[in-house]
Image (cartoon, rainbow, N blue to C red; front, side, top):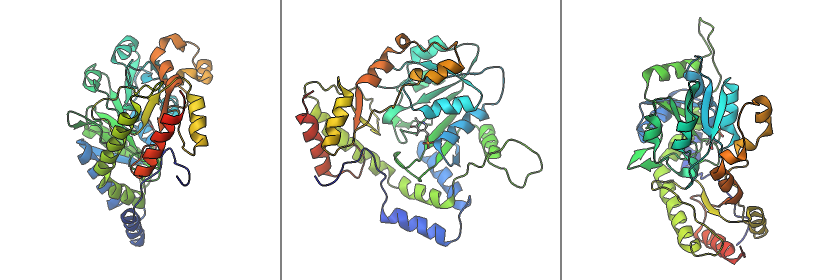
Length: 359
Ligand SMILES: *Cc1c(COP(=O)(O)O)cnc(C)c1O
């Protein structure tokens, strides 16, 4: 193999480039028809009523939290096994995180742990569909009756019995960052089934030419980014098909390997990450790197490991014993390269290397 096999990489074609150039050539740069078409198309693809695009997934989540308004409830339930972005959004919104464990199988938030951690103070639940895997009991989570924000940043197109994630709750968010499944460079979106919330979200984004002085944010997506997103959306189902094909190859090749455990992945996963579990992750990453293959821990550090959080909220129970499944996932899981543009030869090479490392 020549060159390094990257861990993740965007998929940009000549058609994508032509579409962006076409929109740029029109001199149409900000928040015109491309942006509203993109919002319409993503909402239709997911099966949700409407959407508001933003310049990042982070800001989409931040606005979604703000749209829930102020009351005397201030706790937001989130899993500990997730990227820091979620925690930052909660803290920036003036809310307090309540961390819970994931399921014993797979990497998604545990319904039982949500129930145990629900209090009079619970304002919302953020339910991230992790690594491409739909939360199979998302309906039960929604039926608890509290506001749920589905975080679909890693799972656009994942579905449960044909119904796409992001369409189960009143609010869902997406990210179109460079290495996510579908990209606009940077970008994000909030989808909602509520006219009222959509109106509020749209209002948050209006900062110019208004009489009253409300809160507003300059978080917009540009038209040429939306053009890239629309062009990518045409290939999203192909991206997903390709990801599933690669995952199947990895499954078949690695399932018999001593020292490797293939974790449970729900049906309907789009395999944003392909994860294996083994005893010494750091050593594995190093040996793969020596073979010119980039692998990563799927989560840099679980949220309950952040000491700053303990300092800010001394009353939070961040004891490791509360998070046995997160601890297991953090210590033993590693993600190997998977993306539509990886070549068959690349996949073969990755398999060969994993099989050759004594584990
Ligand atoms: C990437 C990501 C975000 C934030 O998206 P950005 O576009 O990078 O701001 C939020 N939630 C999850 C689960 C993510 O993976």
